[in-house]
Length: 321
Image (cartoon, rainbow, N blue to C red; front, side, top):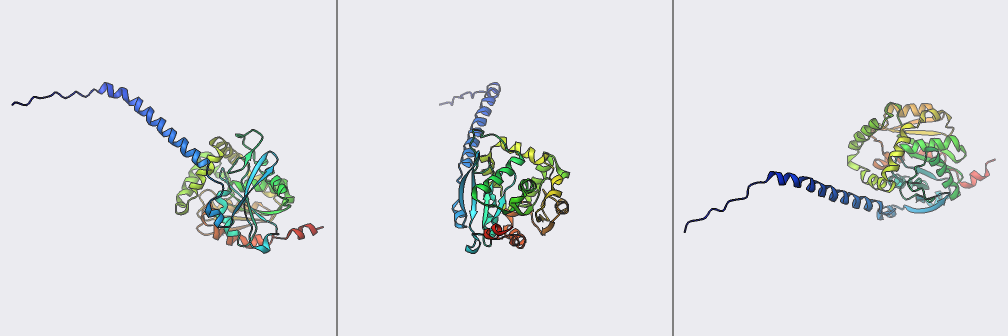
């Protein structure tokens, strides 16, 4: 019996082209839904992990004016629990979550507090202005008010990156609460005062920190802060002229620089140390921008002698004339 040939349908290019926009729209919608779900999962990340608690780090919420602030705490050795604390201040958009490695390292010798500033991490504005971004001065004031709410009269402060801008403002306007400062990777270098230059430097630094990157922690904190607040805070970082107030910082100050920090070159860190009247420079060979996360033990070893000189007991503080 002869075989019959069945004609195959011809390719209809016109109908295929008509389907392309529909397929593209479906892919975009699915991708957007996946990103939204991933974003919400990041937002819902608990404040403390099992690893945090295993490292001796706890968490406390405190009502501070129009904010509900969260801070991490490492009590330190029993002999240090009544001494003046060391306060760790986080950088741009991120929270004290990425200060945990340094808190653990310093907690061997000091009582350590690490707050999330209002709008970042677990700290929230409670006046209905959930999307409002606080100015640099308002962030420094919130830090001062948080200390008062805890009953802490005076502290040593360690800042990373944008945290250095905040604590230098605090030291100039509220010098009574500042015993000494550690500025690690202080921003912003006047030679890179644009978002493009800062983004490029961050990219280079990120590649240098690939072996122990804080990127995963950063994604959590960006989700919690929100992109609107992130971009608004970036503008604050760029516009601030930290070099204008450094000569007015009266507290003893240690500037810590890593030789491989692409965000804050060694030359700028040295300039910061010169501008502060009682400034000193410490250099960590091979260190990058987020020493607190990537090289916490080297960082703690470098700053411990400087911090020890300021850990007076509360009784000693009260007895001062």
